[in-house]
Amino acid sequence: MKLTVLGCLGAYPYNGEGTTGYLLQSGDFSVLLDCGSTTLVQLEKMFDPLKLDGVILSHYHHDHIADLGVLQYYWQLHPQRNPDKVLPIYGHTLDNEHFEELTLENVTKGIAYHETELLEFGPFSVTFMKTIHPVPCFALRFVEKTTGKVFVFTGDSGYLEGFNEFAKDCDLFLADTYLFRGNEHHKAHFTSLEAGTFAKNARAKRLVLTHLPQFGDLAQLQQEAQEAAETIPVELAAVGKVFEI
Ligand code: ZN
Image (cartoon, rainbow, N blue to C red):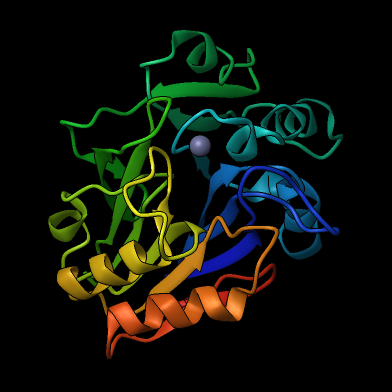
């Protein structure tokens, strides 16, 4: 499978770069993972948005769904869209108001996922874990069925012991790392130290830091995570970067 970064800043866009959005592909199946600000314009540069097979959302904070409404309009109004094809958008139902907005009649359809249920989603089996965050948010673990490769995305989360198990032996661990070392046990986000430590404990093969801060030295953030991750390679997400998993 292949992961392409469309946006990787936390909270708000800055200096021409946007917030959380990724394109996850396996064979000819393409999924949008979160849909923050600038996701759609970045996607248009590299992939036809009408060819998406689905969207899956970790939670409904603005920096993860800012472009969802315009993606729905894209599907609704684009002259080349096949009117018989409806875009499935997967989200949780712990916030019903937002969940209902995932459906735009005959255009997109909201589909519920649940923490206790395995989701069969095209070439992926997906499991979920509720994270530490001010609103309900879920980490996602994708297993590519044909290869057994595992990709784990933390969503947004503060320190949560469960990641040691949830991310176990994954091939790529994409971790919310909004904070520098010294701010551990924050209510909403990992620090560099925590991201690196979870990667090490889970024996992840690679760690990619995302949901990055607008300010401060990102090389330092990476270095702090690398010290905690020990021998596991640590990289920073960046717009346009592609990770083969
Ligand atoms: Zn959030």
